[in-house]
Image (cartoon, rainbow, N blue to C red; front, side, top):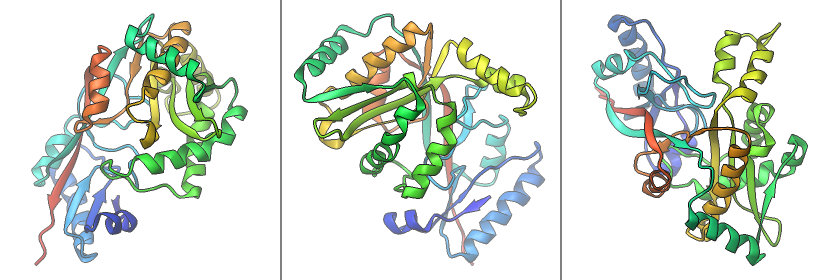
Length: 305
């Protein structure tokens, strides 16, 4: 698939096309035919650069997996055959940026510093931690939370602000599989979201057993695997710029660790983190997390005759 996100190009003042959903047999002639066709199309559209794999926005699975193939993929993250890396690089593509995925052991008790910050913020009454028991309770916060994403993700590679329609589509896609207990929200005194994190128990084993079919029994495998899983998958999170560095991540983290430990979960998959996102990587590494998967977005300058 070839994509031109004109809105993003206009914001970033660039002429970039994207390739996405790239899949083929281990055959250099086949991969060349596919990639060459997309490049020629992009050149006709006056694009000067190609990146990929990259979807319509950074909310789509991005990057080619280049490390960690011994682990099952999670639902919000793509995977691919290992040989695709070599096929893409044969076409003259080089690294644009890597995204890393951390595996974080769930602590029985959060570090003392986190605990102290958690207690201080809870007692301050300047903000409130909101926890959920049902998807119905989540619904009123969906659009406000995704508006917070728009406000805080502006500097992230490939990010384009979500429209209201895209917000509802994103919610529709993931709300059915979310466990409300693992959505944590912090609001201010005016009930405005200032930070959140969304996670859900891993269902990869269930999807594998279902063999891509929900019926007649596939959905049972998927639901069962979520209940038996020892891994929690992070989906999305954000902190209002005014509150970054104020300890709000500790408030979310301690709450998430508590729920995960009570459910018998042992590990957290961090989802993709840009390798250049030093603050987030520092948080993960201070908590004892280690990188166990790596994804790469490639780039190539397009030659115009």
